[in-house]
Image 1 (cartoon, rainbow, N blue to C red):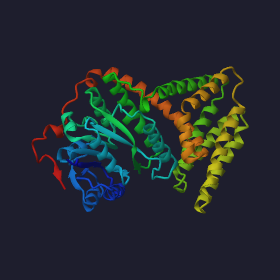
Image 2 (cartoon, rainbow, N blue to C red):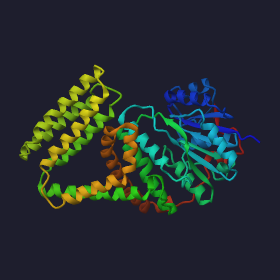
Image 3 (cartoon, one colour):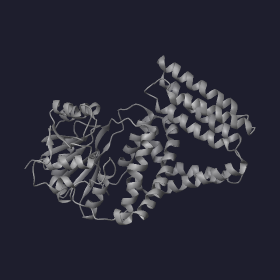
Length: 454
């Protein structure tokens, strides 16, 4: 008997991406049983776009978050398989076919998840880096999955309802899918990661948006979940190499801080902060070619302050570097408007990094702590070498070099998230360990009419 598939897409102000998302589904080699878009109190034309492209549209009424929206869609769906898809994701032509084939071939399969592909549509560096990292994590993960992913994840409808769906306590996009996956694994259910099922991510990340998401929507709640369930699988983002990397980055920061205090070269701290912010600005705009904004003026003013501090500490070698940097930024924007070759920008970016390292290295103390610092950097490179090779093979050596400081920062704030998560767990343990309640939507499954159809 043929297996039918219902696609459920939660959407909040997603009209821009939803057009491509639904168009890709319509162009699939396999036609879905139904497409359900759950409009989570959007203020744009999300509902209009979804209706125009043939989807069944439901409304949450007020902004309730994707967990509630997915549960609402699951309540209405009638297909054998529920395929959860984010509104900023495009399926490939054979994605639905592969999902259905997997469930048809294995009657013991309860759920599966796919992966982002290596061609995210947003061209800027931050989005490319973030989405490629997500792609690498899934492409290198274990086939027998330890969790679930709702960005591109399918599950048998009866099983989803039996296990109460997503926990609606997460009012924002967070770890509701991971939490469901943990419950399924604890119940002995079979979830696989099929690397051949790939989708394209269209989201444009910003630097601060990335940091905020990783800390408050992922890192802290995931730590609480790990402590609640006493489950720390050696898979995906929680691999042993990643945990060791976090510890090494903290050790590296500590050693650098000690050396800076011993030397008294406090301007070096400011310098490296400025260098990183410049890299975020420099590489983040690559592919967008935007004009300078307020951030450029703030950056230049900060550089002037650091320049005064460097002069006060007799660190004269930093002055030319600080003077040249705004000129390079000006030239970059000037030539962007003339449509210069992107490779030129990459070379300037590499020169920028090298100049910063040389300028700072000139005033690093000749101290025995230098050796362990470089040893830690080498070890970090070895631990994450496969990821760096992955980046270089897909986007080139310059992209890989630009990604390394962001990846080190990722390990650093992952450690901060873990510490904060442990603290919250100790303070609110009774609340966090409280048994998962039946979600509002699915608890009224037998009572039609609770949802609003547009």
